[in-house]
Image (cartoon, rainbow, N blue to C red; front, side):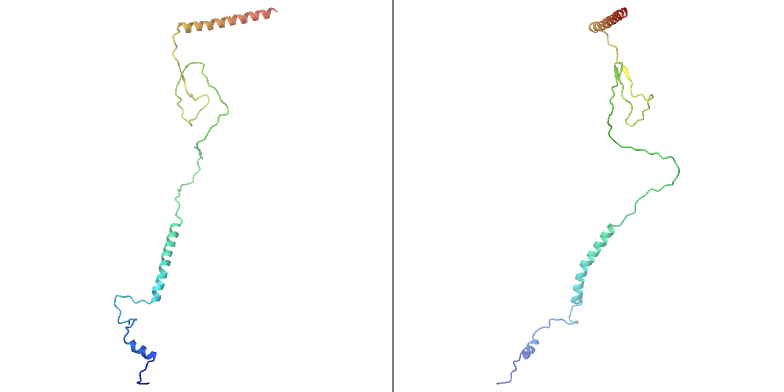
Length: 169
């Protein structure tokens, strides 16, 4: 070999090493405002943030589901008569129907009782009837009234005669 040049790969690497800049800065070369953290701390902080948020949400849910105190009313116990009243709405069904009629003509006054009022038999007055004013008899109405009277007289006379015939037998 002519000349003694070493061309081993290790020799070439050593020659080029002084030309390349260093990729990892030393502790004295970094800026003072940069926080120096190792990569393992960054990874663990990234994993803890979702867990912390989940824990906070779980605590909020549990807090909202807690039991609240019940408001109660207290009082002194004493011996007194017990009054029970039931006030409900319902339907009534009529079993027996009655027709109420008055032997007089007139106008019925308004019923003053309300639903639910007490009614005592023989004492409570439901309503009253004001008599209608009498009408003057016109000739037609007078003739009709006289015909009814004569019909009743004839009917009576016929009944008396029938009774006499039966007694004679």
